[in-house]
Image 1: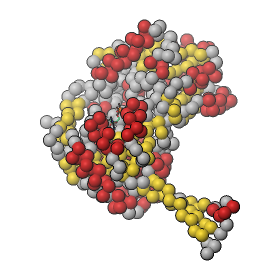
Image 2: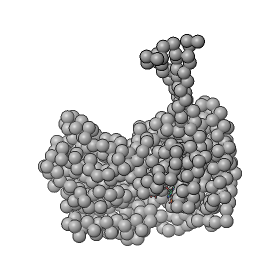
Image 3: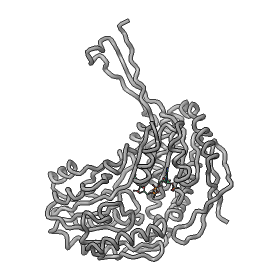
Image 4: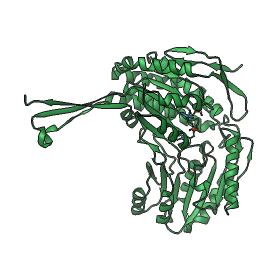
Length: 477
Ligand code: NAP
């Protein structure tokens, strides 16, 4: 019998009249069931968090740092179990699931250090004409209750990116994980409770975003929404949130540009392979479009196809597996539709292009055009388009086209051209000589254009969970 997971509200485990099964995405076996929250539990969670504001804000920064560090330690002790849970509930191959756990630990350790450095600064008021004889400074205060809403594809680390900074800033949290993969986030919430976060500091709700998402987001007691997920849901949130702070970490269709003179084509091929196919391409900064200088196109494509065809598909729990299942079979069917549509418009599938159930073969497409969905929208699957360009600059311009702007990667040994790309691509991050899929958890991270609003990454997320209070002393009287 699979474990049943309760809601965690005000330090208590709460059951409800409704349960939902969570499945192993490869085998289809039920691995757990959760109690599903309705309006009553949503109200309890928001009230508990709202009532806990003073208690959490009053924790010293030493104590907040200690709780976060302890939670990281608990994760370290349970590393293998949690990596296995990620592999099963999210279908993420174990090698990437283990990396996710390591990243979450490092992320929380970094946030615990930053928790001790939340402070303001003095402001030279007398630098203004009417400021003579005045002195000022600002302080940072917790913003209030944070609603943390997370997607399925990094069910641990993206939760750590919200809970860690909220605790560091002194904010209570109402947390709703993705319905398809909610168990790992629950394990992190439990680790924070065990680490000593007071009751009401972190309240976890399971349930459908459609049903409890809207009232959670619209609730005036929520001061800050920290959302990671699709653009469609992000746009809905911004419409109904009202006057509150909102961080939206949304999707992308990241591009890579490969110059004619790069240090190692083989290195670029291997990195693009990881960038395109890690976690079956279900990564917001996955490589979706590769623009290759025509002089290196044939060589790149030949090697890339050979290596794509050599990837091992299978059960994500097997450490040798490169490609696991899609999160749902509907997503596999959606990829079929998009690829079929592109083929009718002239695109060619040169590797993969099919699925058996949830298992989508890693796919490479050529002859794609900018107006095709597989180029301009977010594919979010193990599918990549490779496009020849006449110059590095043309590749950069094509990479910048469209409505997303999360990250981009450029491979070149020419520093001027690298800098041209940095200036020309309107994305939240540019990675030179690597793929856009590179992320270190304390860097400012987030999208431009349709890829989001605001930044995460330890200090940057903490800043967004605080408000500034300016203090001015008039010393003239
Ligand atoms: P999603 O469908 O947008 O779901 C994300 C979360 O929002 C889930 O918890 C979902 O709950 C909830 N939700 C759904 N409707 C809601 C509503 N009306 N109000 C409030 N919450 C609602 O995204 P996903 O499929 O899980 O994740 C994939 C997407 O996330 C991709 O677009 C990917 O690029 C993006 N992503 C972005 C980043 C980044 O840092 N920029 C990182 C990872 C992923 P249910 O699960 O119950 O529907």
